[in-house]
Length: 278
Length: 236
Image 1 (cartoon, rainbow over the protein chains, first blue to last red):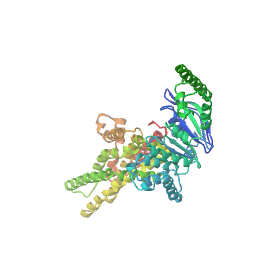
Image 2: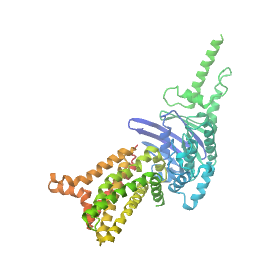
Image 3: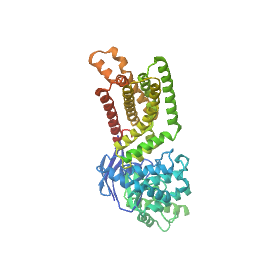
């Protein structure tokens, strides 16, 4: 579905992405993780053809982004970090506008509109002005515009940012429902969200991909490194991996290096505990 | 084409969903009405020639206020990312916004047709010169809007966009005032560069190819530059 090959993105002297390569299969839900400024949004913007890479190749569903940007945009639904909404419009008129500019045929616009309003639970607010909506509803309208043209690929940049826990669960449920129909890429700072919905994790650090693994394997590998005497939590969470990773230096790291680092830190913890007992 | 029309409708909705459009229309028409009354009562002529020149001067102040938000607001609110990741070409985006703004402007011009009805009631105005005056003022507005669209594509700050438009429009309007300091080719160039020179011909009922080319080439140049500005993401 997606092939990213040695993508580099420079902003002047600053290198935002450094030789990024990965592949994503059809139907995957992939989580992009990384600190602020790691390069997640830049990578997403390149995938949506909003900006061009300085070098490297991106192929989405067989089309090269440098040559067929328009064709690719037709296949992508994108929710930027800030939902791109027109506050003076009603939900319905905004979604109709989104359908029109995304090339939904005129005879199917009404059907699609009804479908996404239902899917995103916007019935109650469909005739309200966007400016009057809560943040949770605005986020749902943002997702609705992203899926109105039935894209094959859905890219969501921090879709749960700034939402309360109930709204987060509502948005996550909405994203979960998408995985049967399309490939989903999302970025978030909330690691438990990724654990809930993603199949695979790409951790980006200083513009480089330092971990690219299925979530289940990543968590299992790190759980295997725990010694029986370990006093800490019984299972390694993505959050622990993420924190450990960002304590290391900036060189690219494979998952086995993370693993060895975890072993080392676990051993140190055990030694400290043993010494403390004595 | 349907995408361009959708974009134009969205622009119009953006104007008419707030009081700004109505206030602009009321303010401009009120000013036009005052000047129309003053000119007619003073000149006692069944002609709209002077009112066209007043309109031209007023549009220098009005148009940047209308156009400053076209791209600058999209950039500042983040909706530009929505538009540029939709299956739209930069040309569609530019034409859609331009069409929306031109529809609003045409509505404003259309509301002044009442002046023809009034002068026709009191006398026998020269229909050809009035029609050519309307063509001229419409082309001039179209040129001003294209300039406003271009400056709005350069920045995410609406005030800066308006200031840049004012600078360019004042330069084009007042160029002919500086001709006394120059001679020969430079003088002729400055006269041809001024918008006043070209509108004057239209307002007196003279439509020349050079006047039409002046406006059309100016519009085309600004639209192409706007497209390039969007395409190259100069605003990032």
